[in-house]
Image 1 (tube, helix red, strand yellow):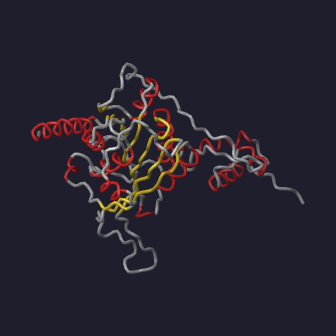
Image 2 (cartoon, one colour; image 1 turned 30 degrees about the horizontal axis):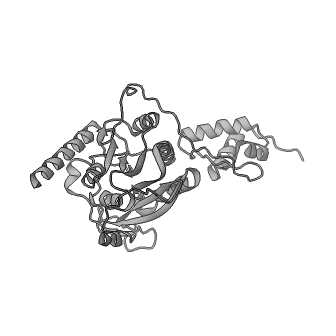
Image 3 (cartoon, one colour; image 1 turned 180 degrees about the vertical axis):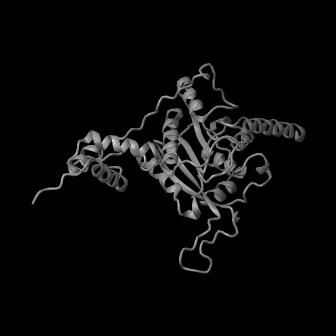
Length: 340
């Protein structure tokens, strides 16, 4: 029996099929299975990644099912046009977060916490940012962002990511974030807080109504994913905690019933309530710690940090949101002065 020799097109289809099924398999492993050159597999992998059809995978498995070394280090970022910018505490910056993180890393500035609400990739109409990336490009972008954040964190620093799953839980964004943070990067999972909004933004999102064909389970909650960098303990012998006993006992339960922010929607399409960063800062940081928001929006985290006597830094891409955040901080100072 004459063995059928695959055409170039058939080889490519076979490689694509196997890569989509398990993108973790190494080029040489797939090449040995399909009797093709490993460089051909590499070219197909590169094409699929560029189109967002498979994720960027740091953990490749070799022919003996051994995990190859993971890539955990910061990727250098082009800071052209911002190279003279000096990052200082208690300031908001209208720069892309990758530029701000790179500048902090070069200047040796370290944060005690990052508290942020990331874009959910659900098509929200932001001022500049396009919230509709191909899913695996979105996850890869987040992974690169939080990989670079490692260079500006102290050991034991906290990272909290606020995120909601897409399609009423059908797209498990929070799960994919946990996977790359805890398995591919140097973060330790501290816990997951459920933010119960008790509010449904889409009263008709039931899927197939009154039918088992394809119902939709409406999510009235979001996640607060809590990590620590390298070590779960944040030890500061001279650090001063500012949380009361009653507040600690209340916040230590991982179900937070907090209504969504509505008053600020005229300034930003997806603001999160001030109560969330307030609780997180009290639970996770000491007085005068430096708290950073890498998607600072209209400055909610910065306002909470300032009120609690923490230093803050915020990075925001949109000039409109950045201006609103600075005005909000100034207005908060005026209210504080009048109250005094």
